[in-house]
Length: 105
Image 1 (spheres, rainbow, N blue to C red):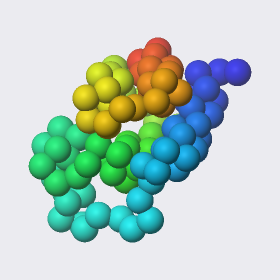
Image 2: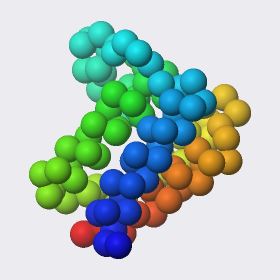
Image 3: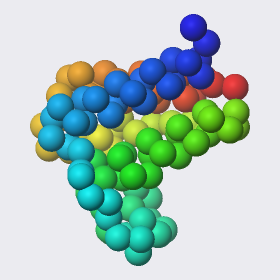
Image 4: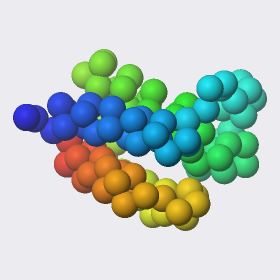
């Protein structure tokens, strides 16, 4: 598999882990909350909401468009701090995403 296929698979895994852990929201945040200019929307969203409504759609969009991935991805430390008692599986997938996105393109 190529790195972009790896990223797509890991994004699916991340969503499944979040759903199974009860970290998936059924209703989106307000449009104003999504317009935050703070890193990870820390002033308007919980980290799980940022992953669900900002990170996942953005990464899927880049993959679908065949666009370049970010040069560097380091969200694992943020997940470790921003999600209470993150599972080992969640941290493993996020670390794998960090590595795959950083080495893409």
